[in-house]
Amino acid sequence: MANEKNSKSFFKRLKHKYRLVILNDQTFEEVISVRLTKLNVFSIVGTSTILLIALVTVLIAFTPIREYIPGYPDGSLRRDLIINAILLDSLENELRIREQFMNNFRDIIAGREPRSIEYASDSNIRIDDIRFTRSRQDSLLRAQIEGEEQFNLNPPEHRLLTGNPAAPHFLPPTKGLIINRFNPEQNHYGVDMVTEIDQPVLAVMDGTVTFANWTLETGYVIQIQHENNYLSLYKHNAELLKRVGEYVNAGEAIAIVGNSGELTTGPHLHFELWQNGSPLNPESHILF
Image (cartoon, rainbow, N blue to C red; front, side):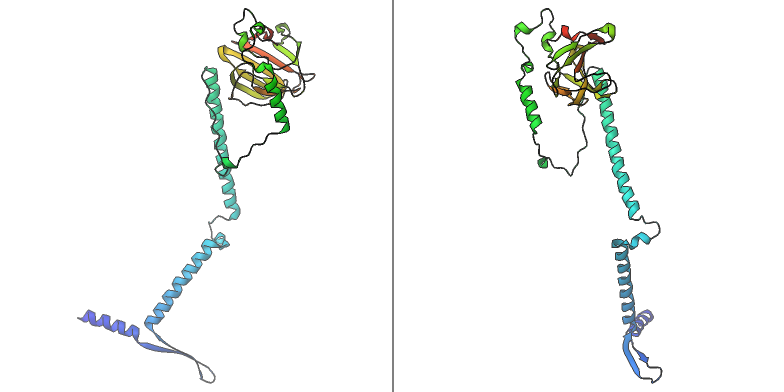
């Protein structure tokens, strides 16, 4: 009973009314007069505190003021973090591609079919938005290649080399004139063919590209691994059209005849044919 009386008296005291009066110090004139209760005072103070906390939280969360808080990263630091994250992602992608390249290289050496290299795609690029256009040079090159009879993979019987069953499977690497023949005694393990400018270089047989890069002496070089341990090399190109790991068909354009590298005196194609690590005379296997 005593506790109930004390609680009732406490609530009654909260509801007791008080008057807050502000007087003029000189004239004692009443300036402001406010009637309050303890409950009103507690409510006003609590509401003001909550509003003040909410306002400070909003200012810190949505304005640059938060950067002045000790330990909080500023704009330049956040920008550096984003750039580092992008660079790290690019580095991981590059390492993944290099690892796939080495795996393909091991498969090629072991005689297995290489796996396709998967490149990380940009999620912001839509395939429907990609538009391919055909240039005039591309159209002329296509018309020239399609008009060449060397694309016929079944040549007439009178053009086949007799006594060499492998000859029908090879195509000429380009259309031109041989100016320097196979001569191993002079470390010339292939033939040099002079041809027209921008003449396409063709794959002599189905195979996989195992090398496609620039070298100081022979310029742009592309190398293709074929069946039965045949290997074909195409040197001094002006431009390479295929990359390492790509599978090419016989007669497919793989490069453009050029004059790149130090060991050249004019536009031509240096072509070599190897089998089991030994150089072969291309003229004994290919009808030029």
